[in-house]
Image 1 (spheres, rainbow, N blue to C red):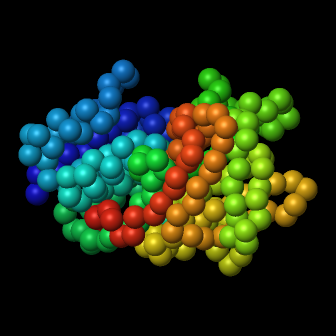
Image 2 (image 1 turned 60 degrees about the vertical axis):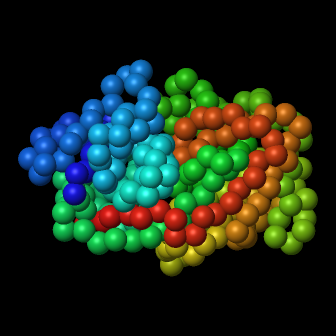
Length: 264
């Protein structure tokens, strides 16, 4: 193989640098591309593919993973996830040890192939989830990265800036108008034991997980291959932890077993 690994040295507080990931990857014959501030990751990936890369890996946050995974999918190449971010949600649900980025490099050599689902909203791929409402507003704030919990609390207690007219119909046909939170995920998250909350039992079930928080009503959760969210104005959202603005309607869909993933 002629693999390329993209590394964001700032992710996870410098996790990749602290682990000596760049050096260990180069020792294995992996082409390493360090993503510097101001560079567009998508452009770097396209350049690597043009140079002949036949496997694409990323050591960075969950938002960076989605960019490289989208390119791998578009070019029919295998994708490798190296946990070097803060939370590494996708690595966790793939079964990759989140505290061992060096061990994750084994995926380029002693590998097992898996085919997992991806999801998209208005054609934009995501691996984990899209959040609308309180969290979607919080990720837009400048200090979110350095103080996530405080920023989220301030957003909950402060005035709402969510788009007017956000509306979704749940699996029972009930209409939710301007709910506090809408979370759409690539496969459903566990919400109660025995699995830890916020994890996914599988990434290849071919279904979106949808959760709506609409106080004072209880939370509603269901699964579907697609779902639509309407709104009367652009919607602030968090896609895999990255702040974006989406034009309505928001059309979500699952792509079953579309992404070829190499794991150790």
